[in-house]
Image: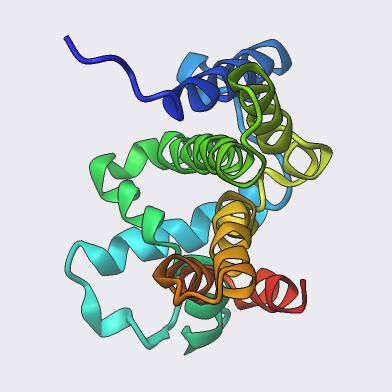
Amino acid sequence: MKKIPKCIIPALISAFIFLLAGLITGTNPYFGGVPNSGDLATQYYSFFGYLRHVLIGNFSDFSYSFSNGLGGSMAGNWGYYLLSPLNFIILLFPANQLNIAIYTIILIKIMIASSSFYYLAKRLNNNSYPIAISLGVAYSLSSYVIGYWGNLMWLDAVALLPLVILGLTKEVLQLKFSLLYILTLAIIIVANYYTGYMICFF
């Protein structure tokens, strides 16, 4: 039996802590809680319901929908809320479990953030495994993440920023072409241009 990759360990620790905190505060839908951070209940459930509606075959509503106020273009909603690659996870859940699907997406983004920062700590500074794991967990459960986890379209930037830093460091310090830098930054910009331009300034 192969050993578990070490980058999985901080992700699992972060997931456990986040799920436990949600259970204690009543925001973990896996155990009957109600996710209520940010604008989840008032905006994002309907946006993701629309996304699922389009992805299961209702492509005529892709660019224009009468559900958008009295009817309007959906380009802004796509560009700001719905283009994260992880959003396809909602297709794995029935429509009546949309809250669990969204919570799962949030959880996965937090786990990716933990693993990516662990990877950065190991590759950039060669930190010891306990320190790198601790840094990954601390990063993924920072006050920003805890304060804004309900705004899940902002979490892609958090999850991939360590990989952007690692790729940029390779470009600048080693003067080497970095596909990692290009791909991760492109995903961040496409997933949410609002946090994308902040990463570009960074």
